[in-house]
Length: 288
Length: 269
Ligand SMILES: Nc1ncnc2c1ncn2[C@@H]1O[C@H](COP(=O)(O)OP(=O)(O)OP(=O)(O)O)[C@@H](O)[C@H]1O
Ligand SMILES: [Mg+2]
Image (cartoon, rainbow over all chains, first blue to last red; front, side, top):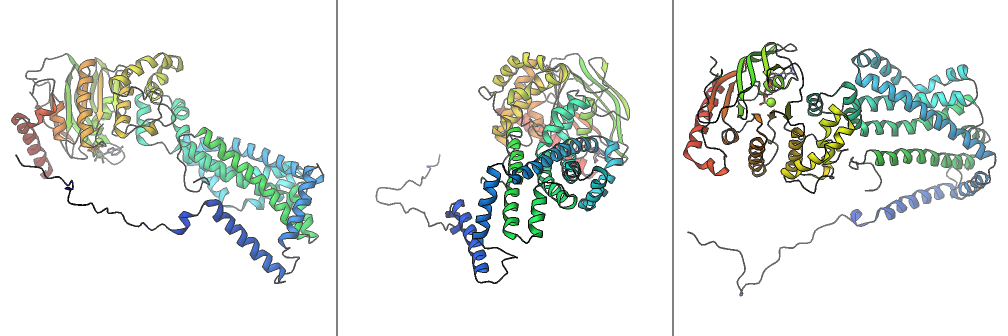
């Protein structure tokens, strides 16, 4: 038997702690909101400097103050139910209908392409081909087919947003691994059961990624549609303001429009958190 | 040479034949790989059999054929007097990964086979049984936990329960614990032995560990590759129930050495 020696210090000894200063990067010690405010202030400051020293013409770039004033004006018009609210509501409708349509078509096509061999072999190549085209170029066609009303904008918005949803759904349906497939086979699951109880839930993260990209595209589609196809939406307001060289108005309209886009994106993200509750937060989400 | 046809089991009490494989061959059409050639094998009720062999010698292929997941190219597979022509309820299977679904709690995962076969109502009725099973494998209190919160070993325990919920007559296990650390693996193996004895289940285990094969099995099927076939069936006449201490006995060492010798020879071929 050997005596075990321990490292316990005898009374005579004192322990030297091996604690050392750990370097913490400066940015890690700064709260996020301070860092973000910093960037905001630098941005506005540069803007103010550039405009107040007359480096660019006020027609090209208004001062931050002018923009803010106009934003307040537009905000009042929106809040009091003025003509801008009517326009905004038209655009919001286009976005909602366009997104709903894109989800319905994109999801169905995604299932067709992701689940059936026929879809993958015969349909997917066409989808890829169309997807590589500049979809905005189809806008005049939609106007010719559907007129200058809301329909042509809905169509373009849906057209742009459909493809990411198809891709997301198809990729999602392929996400289940060999083990899960084999397991369902051993349980005697039908194709429908495998799809609904395994492949779709497994693919939800990818499907939602497609929806998020689609949500961004649907906004772009609606506004482009309004630029190219007239009507009475928010895009038309922007176009008119720009043609009158009312740059502050253009800026503030864009800012309000981006709020709509952001809300749509956040709704999708919120739904994702609810539905795909098991998914770990990934890089790119804004709550650390 | 096939020494595996209905050979004599020394010592262990013999049950009736459960699985009977006769001259089973498999050639994968895609790449013309002959994965199995003339494999004949009989598993008796309540016996524990392991398959061991180098990587690619057709172990998983054999298991998939037995499970009715893929058809053999030639040969006959009979389970409980019925030819295997697809997945069956009396077969329970487990893979290297636990494969629990993250949107279902532990119990919900366990009753999934029932849900798929008999619907939601039947699955609900099976909940009590699932709770019992979880208790057996030491997961009491984790019934309503989502798989994200389970360790690798706990997840494998839950997947054992999922395999057992349909009360299968045979358990087909493809390296079920090889992703676990050695300590949990030993524990899981002892647990597996206990469960098999309690349920009087017939077990067929694919493994890469000679020790694991010897400590668990009545018979060890040693396979050799290209084409995959049976080299020898080694009987293990250590008394039951097995304990981890048996790993230090000379007898255990002898059998391990014998199998290691066989496998080394296989490498040269
Ligand atoms: N689906 C398949 N299609 C074509 N060939 C396959 C397929 N599955 C396996 N094979 C081939 O069949 C042979 C046996 O494979 P198998 O997976 O049964 O081996 P294994 O003994 O389980 O190997 P491991 O110990 O690595 O798991 C290998 O040569 C492999 O390449
Ligand atoms: Mg294998």
